Image (cartoon, rainbow, N blue to C red; front, top):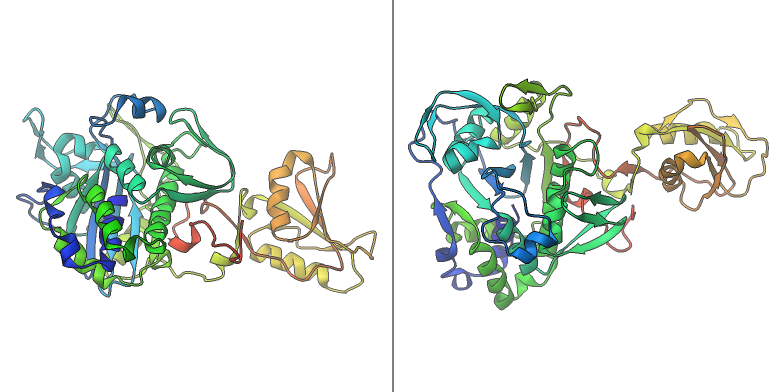
Length: 459
């Protein structure tokens, strides 16, 4: 996924002379060989991005440092369907859960030569059984979206790409610690090198959501990489660009039709592309997994929502209407939807409590709906009172009241109290770092990257 974004986006700033000779470094595959009964082509361009778990070329030092010692499954670790709009103004990225329930089309096993009838599998097993060709066939059957190009990267090419651009900055509002990958990031901004970035996008054991939150981090990382490439001097320096492009293009696999000339033409059409030009979502899945004998638990797509997403790609429509106010919201750890708040008016201004209660509900908080008068009606500074057991929730509420005093109130319970003071003017919008589980909306790239210095909504 990173290789493609660099190759396409960065090429917008250079000419054919700089790109010449780079095509020979790309390993070519033929994922469309002998394919029949394919979906009808829609408007725009569709690219399947596959990240594989290849460990063959990693060094022993990398294996130890980044916990890459397990046996490779020779399957896809990541699958993303990328749609470039016909007017080249928008890129829509849809993550396909690797454990999705899939019905494998009839095919010949690429290892044993055995003929297979249709059978249920996890989606990432398509690559293990039939490589890029079977992966493309399976995805097209599930999505009814015709794929125009295929790009594949492995662990090594991923790390080399990130290192080639000088690392990528990501931000997190909570500590990210995964003993399986070795990832350990404190809250705040971090510039990740290739190995650390691989830990970030591979981690599945940070919380109870497993692969679903991992896909969100992968999307966040892709948006951050886009910001890095478009915001750095790489595009303006032909020598620097060629160095980056050689590293990127020399470590990926792609279909023969996706030449560097084709990438260059696309890149030129995408001048002015920024993180805000990209939107990201994942195929929503049902809460209950489907147990498949000899396969295990699989994730079943929500049919109605999935149909809407892939219909938008076929018809070249945005995945969602984006609220510009969202990008101004402060990113918080605990989603406001999980927090209960009681508002108290500590001023003589009539109706101020009800105003704040409505504003809190509008930004997602659960409120009592009935603001009350505080005992002290001459409070100077707005105060957030919380039981120490809900300290993370208190930080979310405090973000909605910049400058408020935060006080522990042992024994208060799970409902937080906000006493409005004379300094209160408005509730500042807040939002969770990740969309609520099961959400079907798309996020823009500028909504998931680190805020610019001085930008509204800085976390």
